[in-house]
Image (cartoon, rainbow, N blue to C red; front, side):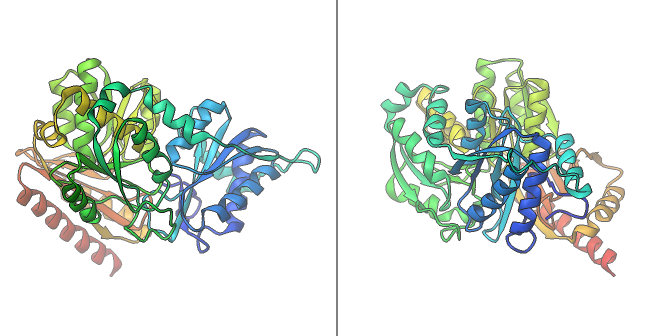
Length: 458
């Protein structure tokens, strides 16, 4: 869970299942959410984690107790649940997921009636109800009811297909290796790809909340099996999803794995060719590549704090149609202004079919940067002091403090150092025109952070 008097982090409520996020706390959170929604109708769904059905039942109890009706969609990808909110015209949704966190974690995301996660202001309202204990329980004869909501994945898959050239993609008969991390991506992606005429090879295709195949965060070091399989079976590409299938990381036909900036930049390029002058929303953690493409194709770039909620809310405010993150999250507004791994996959296939090019060629044509990442453990209590000291240390350089500290150097290399909103760590994102320089930046700032944390602990 988050620090005292805070429930929500960067992306929903997170905590260790049955330690920080117990059924008792989940019921109270459900009651606070239900009070906020004032007897509305909410969809509830969850990811494949072992604790998800248990926590879903607890949250539903809280919602029903405050007079909210629940449509139980069951296990499904987060973006499928978000799409269902719009299609069913409900007041919102509660999604039980910890996304990319390890299996012992779980979390609660709250979605508004447009399918987008709540704004920070709305989260604060729920936190006030929770901490000030101003829950409004319904009378015994006006409790909420729960009923099943079948078919949301079919609706979701059909909706994605309306945004791409199905005929063109189908004619290509692409062979794709799908690694959905033993989680909910397996419920939607193979179905979508079959409808797009693709041959599918699956890795980690069984649903298993212990994530035996790999950890649910699709990081480069987790995806060697995917890269090797793509080459072994001669596939056109591979794609890996996170635990709730709102993010996707791609591997080209040669087995090369790409950070999400690269595939987002490719989508951005073709989007801006069709829609010049549009706004592109992206966090400060994204590569300079996103700016290069926006400049080259007449887009207007808007930088934000890190966090999918911030990107989605900024898109909503500016009526922007495209957003993206370096972690593989792409927000395609014409479909829905939220991260959506299956939609991203369809967009990549659409570009490949439209150009007739292989993924390696399409990505190779973009400006080249090398990206390296790192993380340093840091107690929650020290995060603020560490950031203050680090900012003072780099004062003379060209910096941005939208979120953490991002430093731009004259050779176009950059490093972003920011405290995680979901874990007791600092994250580092470095990029440069050479791999060596990017690695050096991660090493240099890892040492700086470790020294600062050590000095503050002593």
